[in-house]
Length: 168
Image (cartoon, rainbow, N blue to C red; front, top):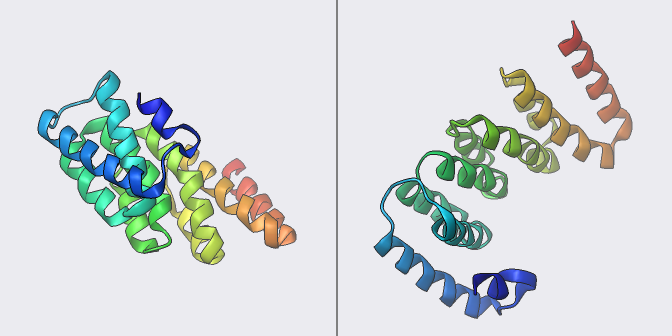
């Protein structure tokens, strides 16, 4: 049922809003603060996606209230890049709170790209400051990819410098 409603923007924005609010209320009544499985995980993902698109600050509050463990980290990983438009510092804070490796690796390039769109220098500084090698590489990839669109020579120079650093 949910697939038919969500796929290809099948609902108007107003209908999706009403549906999502009702879905959130139902979810909040039946879910405990425990790891999710099956349909409950899918419902939570629909709610999180709706909140990220329409109320990023509300999304953070909701996921921290109702999700735990990997479910929480996955949601925060999707939220951090979306939060850049409102507050880059908050986006970095959200990213820093992700505990699981896989969601951090998934979010790093997306967050790097989102940061680079508004402030490439700050994005480079952030990506270079990450201590975990694989995570730093993913973040730098997101940053350099965005930079290459507007300044390919600068992006190439930073990529070359970054590769030299990790090899030596």
